[in-house]
Length: 298
Image 1 (cartoon, helix red, strand yellow):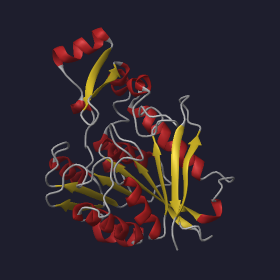
Image 2: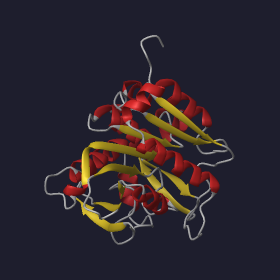
Image 3: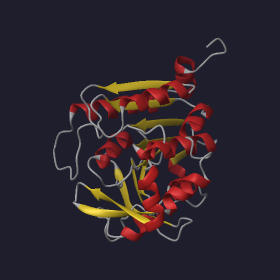
Image 4: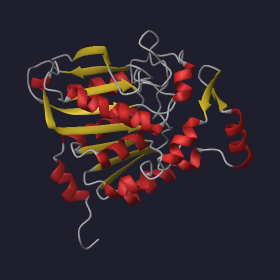
């Protein structure tokens, strides 16, 4: 059976901007586990081959959900371009955590259109890069999450902010710009981003969140990732109580895919990640915990 798609569904979030989501699943009437994917920094739900990943996971029997964070800079009319640069500048980690919660609450509402086709007690989160930190924090807070997968994830947010004179200049000007290397366009970060981080530093501590996890955690990272050090995967492996580490030889930060993705064949590195992700998703949580979880003797 081919997978069905419900695309560009608009979810009302908490921050006055729409969250646009896709559902990919086999429309067979059977209840299936939920998998929610979150994109990373300067990312979006339709980037590269995330769609293909969603199709493969849906073919394996899951309800796959991907969405755009409300302030990622895209809008419902421009889903793959950062036209709303003010929203991009106003984004922060708390907004992204709230957006993920809104998506989770939406799919679990009694009047959800496909309520008969989901298993509300089996919910996995997948996060790429910066989105890996978001799903880690959310999984530590939200008891309904049963598994977590991080792809090329960061292990710390604070170290990514500027320091010293650069930070002072940011505070003084109220905005600093970063280059989107894909488009050559400069994108703003308003100082509120740093301020929000400082005000919520405890909640945004990825190490603390990872240590609190009581669920299995698959950590995938490429050996040739130049955007996020492989050492950050090592940190997550050290902190998570039930981690499984998937180191992908010669893979970069996006496992060989790029945007736009028009190829017929996926890179072997990304195929490997998808295959191992599906294996992990299909394995009973208790079996994973028994295999990788800490015991009292550890």
